[in-house]
Image (cartoon, rainbow over all chains, first blue to last red; front, side, top):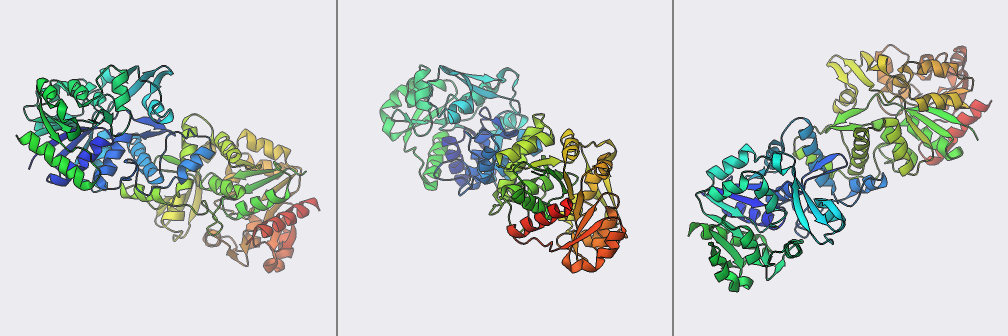
Length: 310
Length: 310
């Protein structure tokens, strides 16, 4: 039995979460999930990364897209478009059920943490899915087209703008939840998933006290690089790193996590970076990191746990 | 050009509305729709009769059920059920799009009348769909099982309880909308559709001032009986009439409309009741009233307009 805490966004990190869930005892995985790309849509509260995590851990996820529910239909969004609602953010019908339920429960006075726990249990998920904060936290992307809400940049404008800066609205007043604090306190291993370091892991670590808590845990801490051979496997992390002045490589990401990690898993394609990683004070672990199948996910999870156990 | 105002619930009246829309000039039909069976579901505002009217007039309606959208799926409600939401009220996916849009617009401060007008326009409906009131009005059904919200009686308990009484919560404070007042003032013909006289037409006429306004209009007023050969074509109107002490016949319904009508259309099966109808001070018009096809609806609409024009 190993109590593992994973910090994660909605795609690469969610795949690793699914891998860890496969190899750990039921209930031993706690995932601290980014909520800074949440948005209000049609008067409803949408938590894209939380939902991706719920779908990944329940097996409902669409394996092609890596988000949403497999085989989902879009009849509700088609009607909403007919009525003139903004249509740039796709919501499937089953997905809308999730969003409606969350919003209803939040309006009944439940916290996002409570609602998420209930929903995870209802979907048969033994792992614990923990929003990083129950406070309002919103990533904003500074571009030449203006200071954009995250999903406007990410979905509506298709990540076409060069990212000049990233801020987290509400961050000063945000607090980690009790569940997050407890998870980190009880952890035997802390993992930073292969998610975007700027806009997925970044806002989690930006919650006051959270970066310090990760820096202070007396247990092995391991990250998995989201950059392989100089490219993000999915999403705009590579271009974002570049335009914000970071090196676009596994090493560039490792530098962002300086002081937080004991080991760093990087892909075989990046083996040449291992010595530079070691110089940052974290032990490099070279392994295959690309997760195409469920077995790939479980393999990478085993690599991570073995690295932690060294 | 004939400006027609129809008072209606969601099923028989909606079919007649569709028939009238077929034979009138675009925009000449104004339908005053019952809102007293509205409900809150999953934190959303559901207006079943308004939606049935929108779907009937736009051609989206499921022709078999007479409500909901043809070919609609139920993925969202399946997810909501997994999360533990109450599942007794069926909502299709496209239908949920309608409900989410309405709720979002109400929360943005629009009235039900404004939202409904926008939605009707978006669905390409030339007729005007007017909620009877923008105030909160809720039918309650007194039964041996207690004083039930309308949809608990109607859907959840499948109309199995004997109806001991009917009340309209909020009726004292409810007001007809400006659009309803204007529609009645400008009407050249007023029609009461073949809807349940107790729980569909009843709450419309119960809105303070509305029954008086119908009684006072200086233009022909025509009703169509919802009871044919002693039975309701759909729903519990027949049992409800009986348990509330009314005669279960076209005549029994006509008595409820005493003082409101100039003509009364009853089915050929009920021709024998014509003399008794005449004694109530309304002219009986015997015609086929069962609407199976679009052509049936248009035919009945012509019968109604011809009756008004006599």
